[in-house]
Length: 276
Image (tube, rainbow, N blue to C red):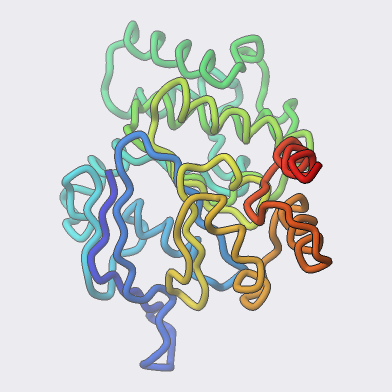
């Protein structure tokens, strides 16, 4: 679904000729995969998401989205139909005064028939469990509900992939849970390719693969168990790990032989029970 080749990107106002926001990124994201990209502020993860969507063009190297090269301006609209993007602030993506009209905005711009638009809007709202709110004004919704409407607006375009650029950063814990459940549903039930950029480590534990970025480069890559077991490496670049993993790490340092790959309370309990 997404492939990068020797990808470099530098902001135009960057005075240091050696400083790249993204440097030498080579990765492949398969159809239906759930990939989480983590890193501290300034690591390059949000810049990478905007490169995926054609908002930025590579300084050098290539990005191929479903077979289409993002450096070809004539393909950008088609690329954005195939790889939709959800940003941090849902208010920046809501354009209408009624929820269903907002979700219809994208399909209308595709020139679809009213019947097809109606079908897509209904299906998209059902996918994010917001059908009951379709006649509500967006400003009457909670942060989590607004973000789910923003996701529905992308779904109505029928993309093959959705890129989430820190979609829970501005939400309270309840709103975060709503959005994360929606993202997991889209990947597991709708078989949609998901790229989720976040700085919340607990949002990454259910991914197929985690990519860790630092100073514009990929420094770790693997399954959640493989990545989060590298506690010392993550701490060195200023990242936390899930609390259960950290507890396992401290237990191991104290001489308790639990697994270093525990991600959930249930896994830690099972690991402790085995000691008996």
